[in-house]
Length: 119
Ligand SMILES: N[C@@H](CCC(=O)N[C@@H](CS)C(=O)NCC(=O)O)C(=O)O
Image (cartoon, rainbow, N blue to C red):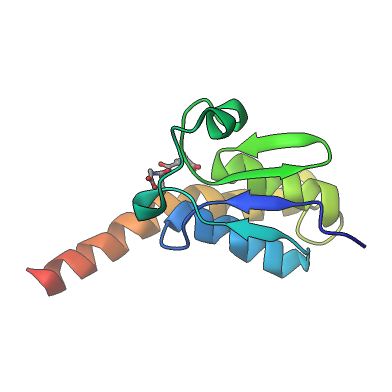
């Protein structure tokens, strides 16, 4: 089956890593294109047509483009992983949301640790 899913974003981005992790966890084939940071490209008209905020990650598949990492992860899980990463039962699904929304706190804690090491 030909690759129809493309992701744009530098691998050093926490939000890009989240989507790459989801893609690999689901087992989807995709094409990765570096964008953002030293790779640039975020102000290209073609990129802004996909994400008017000019940020990574962005994915595009046969439906169109999706941006905002949590939105992308939910979309991929709902489309490709029903009954596994995307659960129909609302309570079961809330367990995933907890991880998703706790990400901000975890990131802050990690940044605090890294910051104290670098200080
Ligand atoms: N809330 C957005 C944040 C997107 C964002 O801030 N992306 C950063 C990378 S983490 C970005 O594009 N920065 C500009 C750059 O990499 O050049 C999401 O979760 O996708």
